[in-house]
Length: 155
Ligand SMILES: CC(C)(COP(=O)(O)OP(=O)(O)OC[C@H]1O[C@@H](n2cnc3c(N)ncnc32)[C@H](O)[C@@H]1OP(=O)(O)O)[C@@H](O)C(=O)NCCC(=O)NCCS
Image 1 (cartoon, helix red, strand yellow):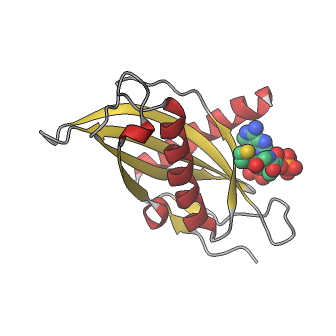
Image 2: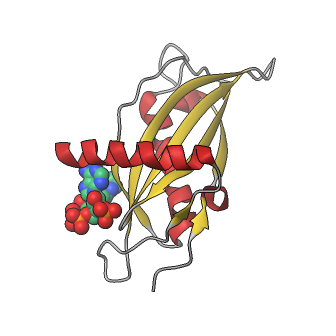
């Protein structure tokens, strides 16, 4: 049975990572793949908090790294559900880098990711409805719908 509808606040997820030498390349900046893996985990936690089941990554939209992330920096990841469709959910994952000395945060990467709720039979399963609490939430849902159509047309 599909669970009750939820808000984006119910599944909002924040994660903090410390960039260690093993996360970095020879320039002392974080590997892009490591940051993508953190984004995948953060987005999946938000998706799983919404549907209370295992959610697999179906797609990750365009990703650009706007600012370097250095060894010793803190990486703050925030994942927010923007829409729930039939069996899939769109999650916006934003990454900011926090200078450990000053605390100043700089936006570094963001991406829209699609996760699919997997039922006990191993097949995609219906997700709870996402309640829009604000006009901003409604706008996010409308924009997510447009992105979904473009994404599925490319599939
Ligand atoms: C994602 C996956 C479950 C879709 O399975 P499928 O048999 O194609 O199922 P469906 O066609 O019924 O699609 C299920 C949902 O996924 C969505 N979907 C499938 N491919 C998608 C894509 N490329 N982008 C966005 N959504 C996608 C569909 O729109 C549908 O969602 P909806 O019910 O909200 O409309 C399947 O392709 C899979 O298991 N992929 C591997 C996932 C994985 O292992 N990820 C980890 C990285 S290796």
